[in-house]
Structures are given as structure tokens and as C-alpha cells.
Image (cartoon, rainbow, N blue to C red; front, side, top):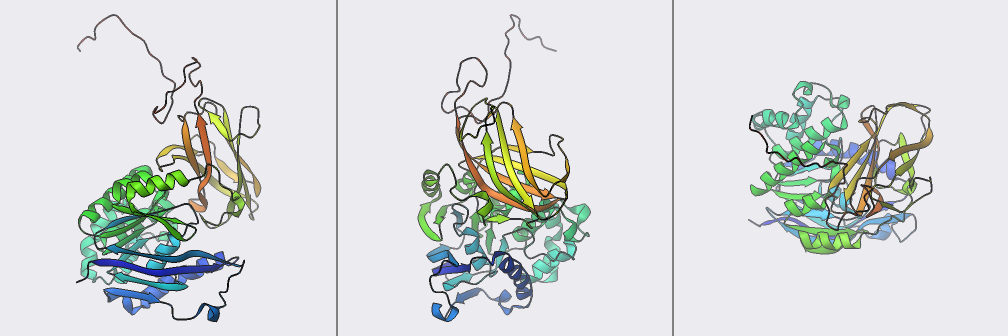
Length: 436
């Protein structure tokens, strides 16, 4: 028996510009229906190949097309845990969608030896009208499992997902966090031989993310092959043996996870060239879209660099086709360049409720004394309306923080200071502590 789990040869994928939304909904529907009826579910080896010449599909070079992947080749052995990293739009999700059979390659070939469980985007593989219980059995059937096998795993799946009270509720009523908890639990517990996980885990809360990473570490030790896409470089280094760096559809580096992460971090530019309104690498149903973002200083002037302790206003433009959106929750996540979350700014947590907002405008978030230590950071933007994701852009912008007089003492934080600066007080007393 071969020890090869995945073999990719000269894999390429081309998309036509301007058809993103149509293709997105089509692939979700077709993937669910196709998976239910496809005879390959019991096969141990799945092969994709494309035998038509590019000219037969009218895929000549054109400004109307973009190569999401181009001539990608690699091999992954059984039991390996491999990280896939790169900037937004690098081709990471496209690669996993091809390996999951959600979409087909334009050119090239991929061989999958084993049963695949995947968690790529919120809602993929779940029928919204079915309950959580019914979707667990549906997914198990898709993976080729018998009813008795699924029943044996059922209690563990529900307990891990922490949705006991809602297991008989249609999943269309689940929040995005509940959706992800159940989807990951199903993917991890129904005994796939290959597990594909995209950045969707970032939707969950920090405690559940930690729980998921621990579970992936456990299943990896049991010999499961894992492909893990993430912007969290600390998680990539801690979980993965090796990594691939993608950029504009090409593999730019491969090898030890730590070494590839170092290459990636050193290549990151501090500011994105592409305007926020033109970013296509975003998730959400589109009822609201972030259009631009600025950092403003105490005088209201735009700034690119901020000092510790300085007043900062983050101004985020948005637009919507709906006259009045209700129950809007906005989050700004600030992360180190290795993907470690340092700070979450959230309107709901501080009691600023956006019950109704106009169809276009700006969100303003003010921080009186910016608390992050000197370094380079990136920001993720996330918005929900009535618990449903409407827009989510990762690495929406980058921010450089320089040393500043946070404490008003003339003392600047030294290099290598911890991640946060917080107000605190000291005193000394000339008596010993008394035992109580």
C-alpha cells in the first residue's frame, strides 16, 4: 500500500472575472448535490484530470480571466500535517476546493488516496433546512459511513460542538459560531483519512479555536493527514511539520514550517496596494461591504504610523443596498505578523449598539491611548447582521506601531517588550505580610 495521501501534478485553475458570485452559489449547490449522488464516496483513490485543450474552452490569455492556481505540483505522505500559507488571493482556498471536489481544475491532475473530510467555508455541506442531528447523519453518509458508525460518534460530536440544546433546531437558525463548531466537530470526528481545514476556524471564539487546534493535534498523532490553511503563523508552526507558501497561484517556498513562515513574514509589505472596495477575497452574503479604511491621529489627519499611547481613530467606510440594516455587530481584530491575536475591538462588547444604520456611511472606532507595543500588525474586519456574516476581510490593512511615551514618564518601552502596555500602579510598604 502506497504511503502517498495526496499527489498534485501541474494543477491550474482559471476563473473569469465578473462571475464570482454566480460561480460561488453554483459550486455550493452542485457540491452538495454532487456529493450525495457521486459513486466515488467509497473509493480509496480519487483522480481528477482534464483532457481538453485550453483553446476548446476559450481560455486564451485575456484580461477577463485570472489564474488562481498555475502549474502547482507537490506530494504529501500519509500522516503529514502540512500548512498552506500566503496572502489573501494567493490560491490557498482554491487549492483546497479542488482537493475537496467543490470545483474542478482547469488543467492538471490531483490524486487523493483516502476519505476526505473538509471544513472550507461556513455552511458548506450542510443543508439549512435540516437540523443539526440530521446534518450529522447526512455528512456521515457522504463520507460512506454506516448508520451504526455515526451513532457511535454522535454524542462526542455534539459534546465537542457544545450545541446540545440546539441539536434538533434547523441549522439555518444557527449563528456563524454554532455553524462552525458543529462543522468542525463533524469533520474531525467522523474518521476521515485526510482533513482539509481553511481559515473558517477564525469565526469561532478564542476558546473554541484553541480546542480545535488541540483536536487537530490529537488526530494528527493518530496518523490523519491534515492540510491546514491559516493566517495564524503560531498555529502553523506549532501544528504543522512542513508548509507551502503560495503567492499569486504559484508555490514560492516549501520545507520546514518555521523556515517557510519566516520567508512569508519577511515578504509581507506593510500596506496593501489593492483598495478595500476591490478586494474579492472576502466572505459574507454581501448585504454590507467595507469600502475603505483610514487611521486618523488626534488632529483628525490620516497617519500610517502610530506611537504607543497615541490617540487613534479607525475610520471604516461601508455601503449597502439595504435602506436600514438592523442589529449590526462590527469587529476589528489586530494581529501580530505571525497571526497572534492581540486585541479585538467590538461595538457590542462596549455597549455601542447599532440597531439601525443607514445604507452608506462610516464606522468610527476611537482608542484614547493605543496599547500595543512597537511592532508591525495587520487588521481583520468582520461584520454580522442578525448573527449572519455579511462581510469578512482578512488582512484588510497593516499598521506600524512605534515606541511612544505611553505612561507619560519619558520612558519608552524597550525592544522586546510584551505585546500590551496597560496603566498600572506601584507602591512599597515597610512591613511584612501578615499571615491570615
